[in-house]
Image (cartoon, rainbow, N blue to C red; front, side, top):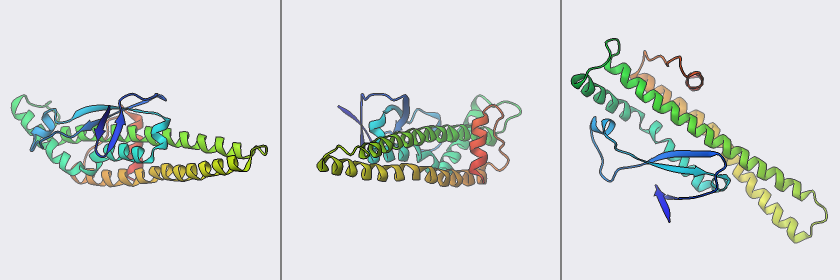
Length: 211
């Protein structure tokens, strides 16, 4: 059995290496307007990330793609968040010192940086996995007692791991580009937004994204 997410299939049970991620499945029918923010339009799906995940580049990139959907649709989500906050203000009201725009911006910012943190965890974890594998395989090549066939096989594995390492580490560069684009789009709608002081790590990530 496997749960399907986009084009990738995630095993329901895998050996854990210390990371559990949660993503979302899109609803069967699109939800429009402020209801998309107010209602439970997404069904959470837990993904267990192991070293096997990291060595499957297609799966690794599919998980990252899923987590980058928020960044890709940030302007639309800001519009919907504003609509949701206006509806909430009309029905139950907001705090006296908070505007609809402020609350919408704060909600989207928190969701955005939470996704940034998860993606950073994923990329750094997989980078350490492929780095370790490459080091171990390179060490195996130093064993001069191996027969030629074994050495050729190990050389092939080393080459494959070098390719994986390059692609995984490149995602750190891609991540900085995605964050900068999202921060710029966010600031066009939330010009006066100031990140809360309560999350120092999130503030550091936010400040770095604007450089």
